[in-house]
Image (cartoon, rainbow, N blue to C red; front, top):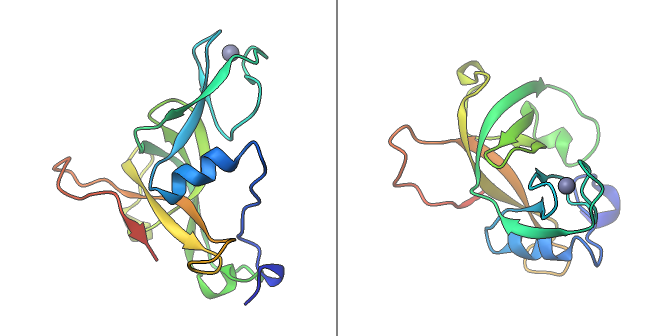
Length: 154
Ligand SMILES: [Zn+2]
């Protein structure tokens, strides 16, 4: 499968390159405004809350709460067609912004609004080649609160 016939590949540009470089290292970044103090996502070059351009990258904790979700049983666009059913979700990052993502590693009947999640990263694109991206997804956070390191999911 080439990049031309799949629909899950992000497109990095000069501005979002820092974001994708960080996800490749297993780190999630958000943008925070120096003027109003609020974080936002997806990354913008100005603050969507107060329009200040005093905005910088900041490492996110990787923790989030499940805000809402939908179980997708059919999607004709590759590679989603091979992945159904999957959980398309909006999560609220600990830093505040809400983010469109996917929840993995949980049965759909085990999901509840507000459940504690942690980031993981899924490789998409051609492995080991230019054009491979690590896309943030979220999975249930262990109740014990520790032990499992952030990792890569398939
Ligand atoms: Zn602001």
